[in-house]
Amino acid sequence: MMLVAGITASVLIQTMNSLQERAIQTGAETIKDISSGLKVTHVSGYSDGSKITRLAIVITPIAASDGLDLAFGYIFLSDSNKKVVLHYNSSCFSSSISNGLFNTLNSSNLSATTYGVMVVRDIDGSCSSTTPVINDGDLVVLLINATKCFSGIGTHTEVSGNVNPEYGISGVIGFTTPSTFADTIVDLQP
Image (cartoon, rainbow, N blue to C red; front, side, top):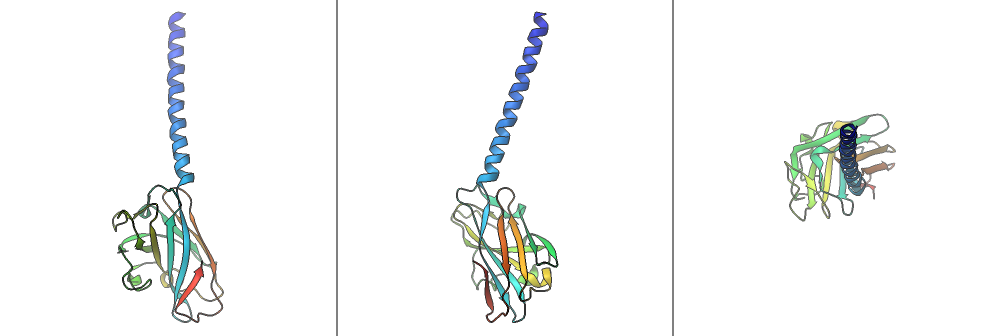
């Protein structure tokens, strides 16, 4: 009886230790998911006079966020008629904005399923073409070829979506295009 009681106690202790380890791991993952993420600070569009042909989405990590690797995230975007999912294209990367917001990257290199990255501010130099990691204080622009995604975005069009990081809180995209495109560069979301 003593031997059976000892074995049973040993099994119970091992089970409790295993459950405790899982609880600690789950707690750490939950904290990471709710304390990390990014926010969309601004969206601008480039107009050819009749349609928005390119989108620039400015993002930054939320306060105290862990580093977020954009290569493992994606953008979900819808113009009410079509939905697209875009992934990072490492060949469309710039470590600075040298020729204006819409002329630094060649948007013709972007497809209907890819987006490019331009770095505005990268304090620790962690954002590169092969590992586009952004962390606290960084600011980047995601460039989308709206012509290839939606055949351009016309007037009075409602656009919605998310910039989804590898984990954590997603940045929200939501705007309605104006009734006319009087300027080449159009502010779409403050």
